[in-house]
Image 1 (tube, helix red, strand yellow):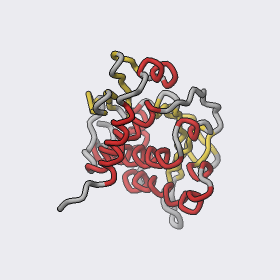
Image 2 (cartoon, rainbow, N blue to C red):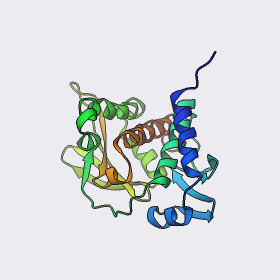
Image 3 (cartoon, rainbow, N blue to C red):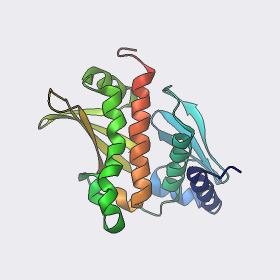
Length: 217
């Protein structure tokens, strides 16, 4: 007998909470596009998702990229549902931090492993900065130039969730590393666990984009 997978259970739990969501209030707080009293829209990595009382579903794709796993698909829909459910009404501060800075207590020892979810970016783009830049521009990221030894980009991942990416080109001793930093208010929008899942979904989805088109496509 097959056991229901954890990511499916999480998604069903989120849908159960969405049944009672005040969509009008959520849209005002979180920058969702309100479709009706029972539905809103949210963009994520060149895709538009519908968030309704009974489902979070893909509506359209501005950018076509390689399909990822079933787990990835469920995780994306769950974290977008979590976003709509957030009671936060904060404005980003412009103070950006690594995911590990938000961890504490029981999560502290595992925070660095969550950040390793960004490793698909290094695999997908490696030392090919041109390929990374192409993907970043297609998504609408803003090139902010050099920061120390890295090349910094700004992206509005979600309406109240800006991120910075810093591309550190590898050499003979160290591989290319691409860091993801969240605004300090991110932990007020999400609890740590779903924030870590969002981090992983972003990294994995952006990596999939790198496989879906050649430079200059």
